[in-house]
Structures are given as structure tokens and as C-alpha cells.
Image (cartoon, rainbow, N blue to C red):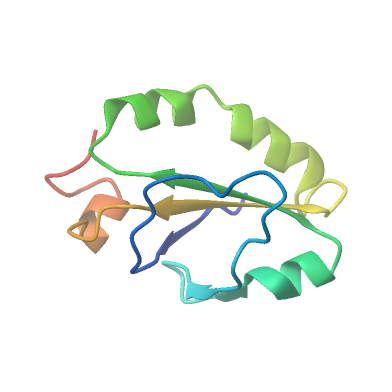
Length: 107
């Protein structure tokens, strides 16, 4: 199962209004893989971006519910291959150790 934890350096305070077009971006995950939003969409994939923080217990509880894991298992590379799920770390102070669950700022 692939969940790509990406870090983006921008400030996002709210979601885009209905009918908006998401801005294109390219980001590198913690495994060194590069991903481009518009390329994935051009391939016909649905892309889910989950903005989270390693220290946030509400985010952790949501992740533990398995909702996105179930979607990814069914529609990701081992299923129909038409869904990508990216967990985006939203705290610029998060360390690589935090992303791997071994840092001080993890739930």
C-alpha cells in the first residue's frame, strides 16, 4: 500500500470554493518519488489530498478509522488503479522523524 506523505511549502487556510480548479503542483514524497497533480488527473485518476499534522490527535484518529485505506485498497494500484491518496503534512516544523512516527511531534 502506498500512502505518500508529502510536504508542501504554502499556506492553505480554507478549501477551494465549489467549481474551482485546483492549482497544479509537483511534490516529492518521503520515498523520493515525484508526483504531479495534473499528470495524475490527465491519466484519469481521482486524487484525494488529506491535509494533516503528525501531532494532531483528531487527524490520527481519522487515519486509524481506515476510511482512506479502504478506498485506496479498492481503487488504488492493487485495485482498479484509478485513485491516488496523498497525506500532506501541513506543519512546516514537522521533521522526517515525525513523519516516520519516531519524532517528538507524533501522536
